[in-house]
Image 1 (cartoon, rainbow, N blue to C red):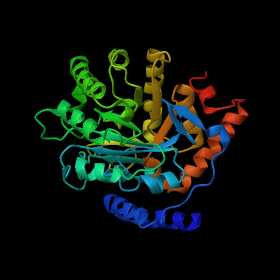
Image 2 (tube, rainbow, N blue to C red):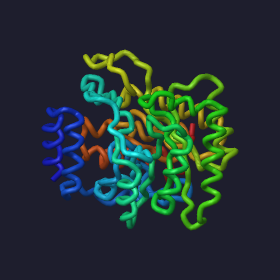
Image 3 (spheres, rainbow, N blue to C red):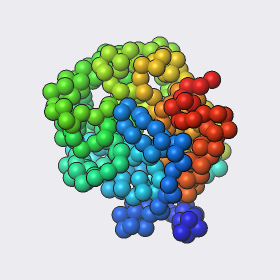
Image 4 (tube, rainbow, N blue to C red):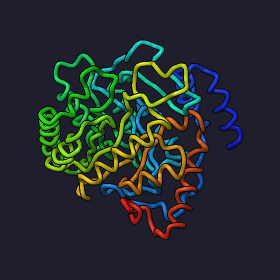
Length: 347
């Protein structure tokens, strides 16, 4: 079956990237996804009170509308993050808006939070029965109260999601990254925390802030202190980058966020900066550029308790999940670690 999935992955690379993604979602909904093997026990871990069979998660963007979190858990991910969802449905930016940079093992996207809206998302997420499934929430492009959009999503999805991620770092919604500045972040996290504290305790779930890799000096420390002050569980480092390292593809000048292999070094360096600033006070999740067990291990050694990936699946297909977990387990054992947690931040 893995050979078949590999063949399908190669065939889909001949399609328009967005059409290929739509086809993949439909195939998964039809039950045509792979099934992962049992995880090595060394990979079992706990993140912000959530028990994970392994620390390798699916980043948001793949399952925008909470359609296939079950099949992706079955494929071997330790957790799945759905979204980004906004209160109102929105079409996103005009196509083309998704580009494969095959020579660079990278992707550029300027999707613009295209999604079916909160009600459709909530209806599907309510059917979750097992597994760790997070909700990545954002603001509508035309919203008059963007911070209010995050509160709306939190209230509607309360008790349905295993955890929440506040996405303030997408480069494809104009002005969104301004929420990372001190005053705006204080207001956002203050209003979100107020809403959280007013909701029933039985629905309480960890909350994370997702940040950009393009932060200036001093911003890391400000974000850490603000997140800690409002009792969020942690930070996801990082979203896509607007920077452009040397690239070979003809799509290299396209506007949007760059993900994939070229993001690995930048995002891992930023992760290390957050780990140094946090000093163990916050849970960190590492994302950006992961395509191997060695990449996942590097994020963990830099301070991540768990990792997320998406772009590498475009080039490697679903068999990548099993390979990363196998390689990660081997690295942990080779270096004498008894668990993932033992390796977090180990120099």
